[in-house]
Image (cartoon, rainbow, N blue to C red; front, side, top):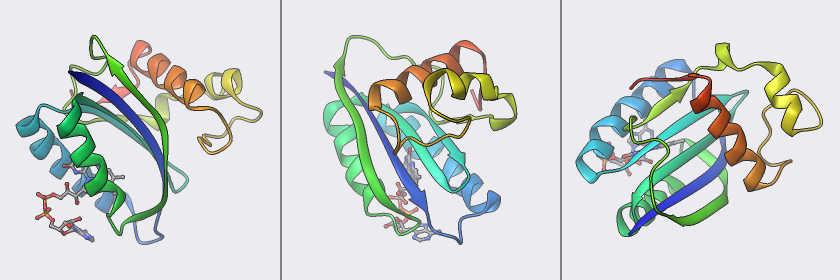
Length: 140
Ligand code: FAD
């Protein structure tokens, strides 16, 4: 039984590039062990992450992440049972914000800013799909 979960959160001010890299490193190691794949996006203090894998593994990880003091305002954007993964190639890919075309953001929202709090979960997932399609996810 596979599921896909997506959430958004606000990083605490202390989270910088070094902390982001530490989170990604830990995520890759842990997720490989527990069969979880996905991608993490960090922009202007906002995290957005997709997690895919077995239902209980994903649920346990989400609970752990939601209690992490490095972010707050964790909001569940989407949770679905799925037949196949979209992020099978990434234990935890990182969205390359340099390759994020502002036109792509405008396609899905009122202004060219990444703000998952202002759009539906469906829209955020569609945006992630396009990031995969345009090779904007690193760390395979
Ligand atoms: P350890 O790394 O040994 O940590 C033990 C405890 O210390 C945990 O409670 C941990 O939350 C806390 N801790 C560790 N480092 C810090 C720190 N720098 N500041 C404050 N507390 C800290 N983990 C994954 O496994 N996979 C993911 O995909 C993933 N995505 C994440 C996305 C975001 C936005 C954030 C903020 C965290 C993410 N994490 C992820 C980290 C997760 O919240 C846990 O910290 C991690 O899974 C714990 O790993 P561990 O059990 O090996 O414990």
